[in-house]
Image 1 (cartoon, rainbow over the protein chains, first blue to last red):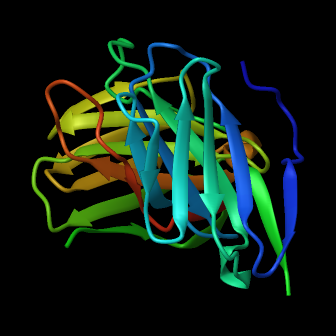
Image 2 (cartoon, helix red, strand yellow):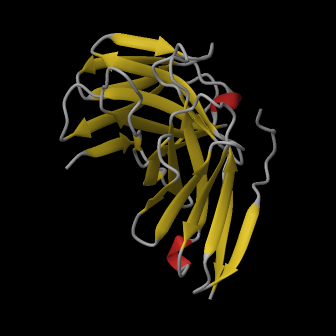
Length: 115
Length: 115
């Protein structure tokens, strides 16, 4: 389950370094995963997704890795830029959850990029 | 391409006053529509979803209601606001699929402050 709290985990990286943001998902039956980026005061923005029949998917400067054995998802951002500073959160789809809107969202990690 | 709009962007309302937030989607037809609330430092809480005109499902008991008068319009309402209704309200859409949940795309959000 998710813990309740006002403070998000924070990852601080130097501009130009690679960032790795992790997410532990809850249900071994989850078949689809999404990473979102949310800048302060804005709506979440889709970054990349991956289905459970894949282990890795690459986009522009981003890579998502899925480890179903330990129910772990990671987002790798190459050559992190100041514009990457935001909260990143993952979402998992649990099929046949009885609800049409069955994406479950994590609370997120705040990425801070130092120039 | 598809776009999703929300208004107003910010709103300050007194306790006990009514509420109406509007969400519209362009560039797609027959979408699934969702209302979420996001409290500071917390994950997204699904409030309502709709698979078609006049079809609303509520995820949590609350002081709010939703309506879908047109295919691409989703409205969140309240007759009397509570302090606890303050938060960041997000509308989202997804394509309807028979077998799995599709990516949800979010609007820019409405920041509601109840005083």
